[in-house]
Image (tube, rainbow, N blue to C red; front, side):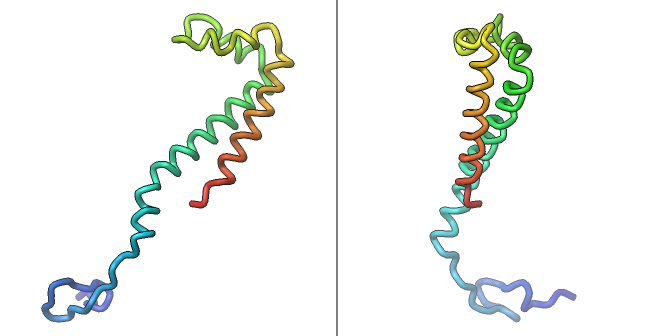
Length: 105
C-alpha cells in the first residue's frame, strides 16, 4: 500500500531509483548537534543562575558557601556582598545570552 516513490530503495529491485548522497557538511552538522546542545544548556544555566543571583543574592550565596563540594571557594568573594553578586549576575546573564545567540542551530 505504500508508494515506492516516497521511500526510495537502494540496490535495485522494483520501484528503485538512484539516491543522492548526503553532503559531507550535513554530516558534520549532525555530529555537532551535541556540542550545540551542550552550549545551549550552558547558556540556560548561566541565565537562570544569573537571574537567581540577581534577585536573591544573599540566599543564593548562602546555599553554596558551606559543605558544597568545593564551591565554597568560588562563592567566598560574594559572601556578605550582595552588590558584588548582583554585578556578577548581570555579567553572567549577558554571557549566557551571548552564548545562546551564537548558536546557529
